[in-house]
Amino acid sequence: MAALIEAAGPYRLRPVHCDSPFEHLARAIASQQISGAAARAILGRFVATFGGKAGAFPRPDKISTVRDEQLRAVGFSATKVAALKDLARQTLAGVVPDTRTLESLDDAAIVTRLTQVRGIGPWTVQMMLMFQLGRLDVLPRDDYGVRNGFRIAYGKRELPTPATLEKFGARWAPFRSAAAWYLWRAVELGRSFKDFGGTPRRVGIRTSDDATSTRRRPPGARNHSRRRRAD
Image 1 (tube, rainbow, N blue to C red):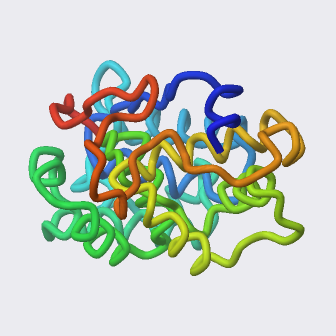
Image 2: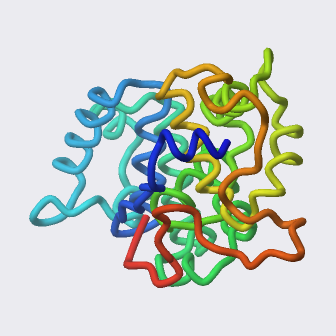
């Protein structure tokens, strides 16, 4: 893993903020199981039809009153229409919080709350935690790319199970987001186990069971504890 970190370079995951959790999750719903270009086209029509002035993203109170056929007309499937309407309802009910409230919650609480929305699973929320909120200790155990990167970096013939990855990944806390990022890079680099050093070595992140060490940030990581407005 140390050789992987050297090959991939400094940790470069930077959060990209949206105006609200509602917007982030609506965009996630729109993007499910279609190409990026198709999702952008649908979202463009969605904003143009239901948004506010100057291209503002549609508000949950607006979407809660829109007829299903109107949402179908801009390109959403029936399943996604149901998910969007539920997202709007859950936002108005306070289950999906505003940005400030969201940022005050810990990772587990955010997953618990947001997965109550129809069509939103743990993986979607984990991506939000990493790429919008900049949380540093998220390991998306079900992500195929992360599992495949682990297989490559550690010279395994088969993908680890999500449970195996989660157990092994405990040693990367509190920087599991960085570990996931490097495992994604292993797939992109497309190198073999031998190219990454040939023998499993500890990641360049202090592990939770190293009682004699002083914790430090992974290479290139930023402190995201002070976050801007977001998803």
